[in-house]
Image (cartoon, rainbow over all chains, first blue to last red; front, side):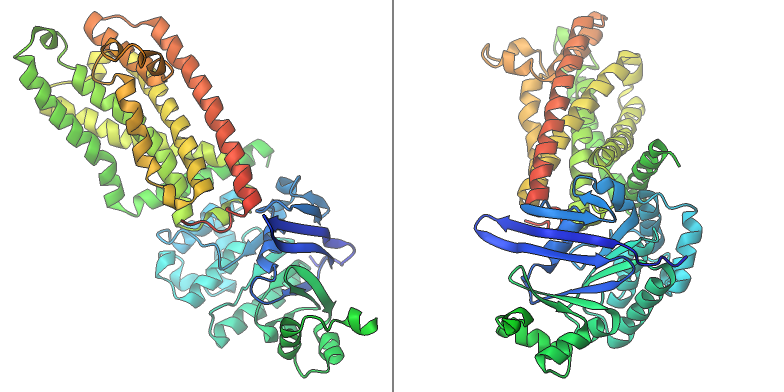
Length: 255
Length: 269
């Protein structure tokens, strides 16, 4: 069933995270319309992972408001966590368990109906069948990434948060993953929020880009708009412009 | 599916996760039974030697073996809760768990359930082996009060295990040695192998704060006097209620701190 985008899947207002004197996220405000794919971009330490962790309820904000799928986070996290999922290079699946066992465990955690069928379905779609009964620790990086994606899709999430989903993948495997994400988004109308350092990936997948620097939102727009505005030939050059100067945002240009 | 059934499925998922892990590694299963069995064999022979030397021990052949086996119930119960929680940290799996609908109390419930399984494998195996090796059956010697002692010691083990899990979550895996060390501070105060009145007077009130002290006094009452002491049983239950309430409070406070500091996503030393 395709969901027509009508409301914001994510709304963030003045979101701030401080660790002592350090401000990791600084009064961040943005919204993500339902049914779209949006990227969070920024250099290491820009606040992408911190923002995603707060959206997931893994991290308490110091200030600000978050609404996810219509529910305030983290206060009502258990009303929405079953409709979300995520992948991140900072977390893993137990390596001694087989792929099937890991997926069965997560199917139970998310209350998935007919988990055996769902796993077979994902195995077919993500090409996991050959190693479904192999310990997760014996997989290649590419196989493991597909397994992590299968885990993230086990509950058919309405909102998928992807932290560097194709990091350390070869171009072929990365392309398979991107194609699959496009397909999932098109078929289900799910909302995808992506944090990535791969600019070509962002240009291909995302309708809008949120540019972060030192925890602040410094610019936003579609990849084409940003490229045009900064007078560059691709998003990577825009990224470098912002990362190295940071001062030249559209707002400042307009002023 | 009703919320209660969904909660049960989440607990089942976590129990399943640890059963898969146990089944995937025979050294883990062997390790569960190894120490209780070695202890039981050693203390059994010590008892046999002393049995012929002193009159009081002649009356209570099973005191040491029972004490060793029951002590392992407490130790295994605590260690299982702490280690299984740390297993999620070693596996960098905590982030997945706490972004799923799994509630902290459901995670804790699954750890308790698995600790029963692990304790039964470890201590149950040793208790059965004591029958052919030492011609001693703890089941016959203690009778049904064994269930009461087992439950109270496991319960206390869970409380300590939960406190250690919370400390490791807050302090990082650098604090993992607490899982093995803390329980041995409790052993001398619990009067596992001797009556509490052996301890200095000022230590005894501290001992009575531990449910384990009442359990081991109760065990000796059954073995030496043939009586189940209701007052000791009540003492153990009340002390356990207090310890578990404290443990839950500590866990919730430290879990909240971990969430505030981002420790659920990045765990390590």
